[in-house]
Length: 459
Image (cartoon, rainbow, N blue to C red; front, side):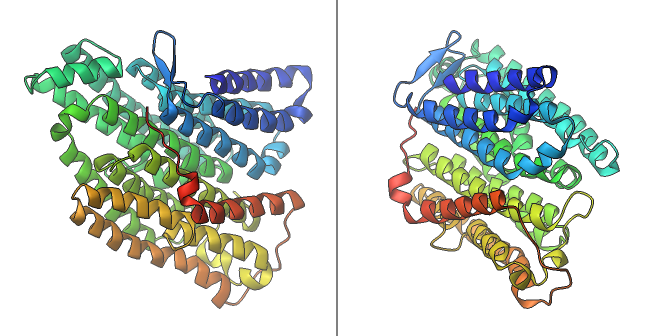
């Protein structure tokens, strides 16, 4: 809960900074605050404290995801510092990001479905504004409108699902719903199960799982580059945390009613995400479909969590966030919003700037699941958990999809090292060099010390 107070305070301070002429202190204070939020969340480990009449519960699972969200926010601020600093509305951008982080923490720590709704809305409303923050860019405006309209429909599905579940169980609390489901003996009315499926639709939208993914490529392409990086990391971490929390705590006793649906969503997400990415030339769209594919791998851990699904998902999300932010740090160095990156933008980067090419290569190999990087062990843990529960066919589909994924990641690697350079050498600020070293080191450390870093996130 300390993280919520700190993040909310940082958001309020960001608004005050505009009035009090403290904008030059905004980014350093934001970085210190985010690091403090993550550090103080660690001190709450194994306490499992509830707040606001048990509407929020910070068990180990919630704390782990809160730490990931806070650290991802910190790394994002370091990556996007130059972009944010150059804008005249720096305080507005910082405040929106902070409040969206608060929404993300609500989404991974809710114990009452009202707080789930509030978390999604706090996070989403901020992102609607950020997606359209390039007011003179038609694509940015289009991204904001599409995100707003599709997000509103998804929220409607979620709210109707919550209402139907409440009507059949008489509770908004996850433990109350779980107990009612367990004691119902399969005698719930049809609308109760319809409510569960409607909630699947609402949360699958936030996760950009197929077939609720149509908004993602256009929104990610049209949004400012750094905002796209935020959506692909923090938003996905919050969405999968909310998804897993709901279905593991409230609906586990009636898994037969939703498991097949989620399994089919997982399969088509893996297939569509990976195969469609192969056909893209715009790099942001490649990462958009890559994010859709990774949503499929994460959903495998929801379908078949194994002995410790929360730990597996937490590790996978951490590996994905670090690799994606590293890739977007490089992407930001070789392109900008006025000159979007195509695959050809990376031609000859290995000779133009070997350091950038190395960082990009490590991040892409991790996302592709190549050992000994963190992305490989994330997929390994997901697959082992699924095999242990008998989902061998699902794992084989996921492995085949991963092989397709290797192709489009290697398109960029081939462009960097085996195609002639058409652009001049690239120079990057010293601060970005340090950040890229940290992100690359984290990708290696997470992979080499998997067993040491794999926490036990049991509620």
